[in-house]
Image 1 (tube, rainbow, N blue to C red):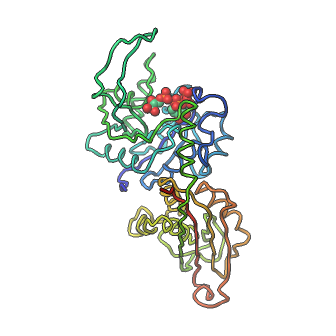
Image 2 (tube, helix red, strand yellow):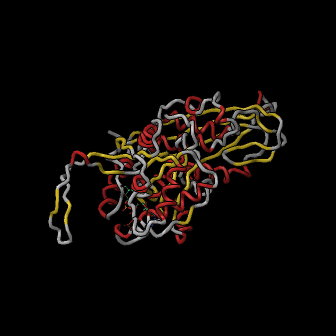
Image 3 (tube, rainbow, N blue to C red):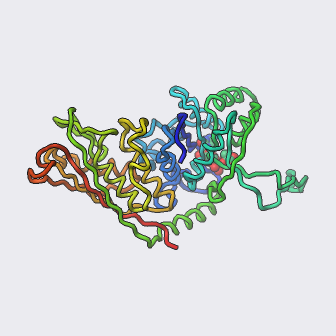
Length: 398
Ligand SMILES: Nc1ccn([C@@H]2O[C@H](COP(=O)(O)OP(=O)(O)OP(=O)(O)O)[C@@H](O)[C@H]2O)c(=O)n1
Ligand SMILES: C[C@](O)(CO)[C@H](O)COP(=O)(O)O
């Protein structure tokens, strides 16, 4: 996994109408597998530890659909109103990011739900080559390509070896891409089908790195049927894993604690490197345990200053994205909070909803229980609090 030395934003464009995808909802809001199309990409980018900001560009008419489709809607920045073309939508997204400009930006089509951590890492690695301002994923072509005229008569056969099919996410130096988009917007008749073309127009070299044949763009109705089959293979999973996690923090000075992503007023705080949310920490470990992928400390080392005071949402979203990246699904979550105070009951439903929102999971799959320690031990002496979590995860079978 790449370490972020520069700030990285992801811009997901989802303002199209999906006219080629046939009747029904705009394609990014149609369900594919267990979630709307857009939710798949948002979960992957939001869970990638190198990415600090995820912004989504939508059609203003789709606000309600967006809120219903994207579990993380409340934690991401407000969706950006898009434009009449993909190019205009990307430009609008870049302008929205400019207020707090990242160093790098990854531009991705919502219509490509099979994007992976590996592909994102490859994009960032390609862009980290000194002097590189643009890097795009490309795959070699297997079919012979012909150019044709209006009557569908062949006019030429370009040499296939030198051609690549270009995908997203496309990675750019943010300032260079924004400047190129601003300049090209004044060029009448220029219509780019991707952002690399805008950089090419501005005279910047664009590097191609290996794309992923699985990272298809859903464009026509048949693409949805094929994607559904792939996701259904994922859902018909028979490899059930169980993970468990435990976390404890000592009370310290303060006036609140974070539990299950909810801020709860209390006469003590907790001593912690991050926000000290024992519920989200125990749950993150349970999810990582279920896929045998280390623990929270190996993914987010306490020695790394970037996680000081970090919201534990990030850790949990990352564990969720790792499961999604393996084609897995969380079955259910069962958490026990052990403390004499604060009282957990009044916050139970808010915690279940918050965890569900971070993981893109129905709240009914999340159980929160609480117990005291009957005044025994460190919890009983009110020196700290603890949480235990169990989670089931289904992975694709052979
Ligand atoms: N005005 C537009 C047009 C497209 N897109 C986004 O750009 C991506 C790639 O575009 P495409 O697959 O062509 O989507 P649509 O424009 O929705 O499809 P169609 O051309 O069939 O209408 C999609 O995620 C789409 O939502 C956008 O944000 N704004
Ligand atoms: C950006 C893109 O996905 C790269 O292959 C593609 O150009 C989008 O084209 P569309 O016509 O907007 O689908």
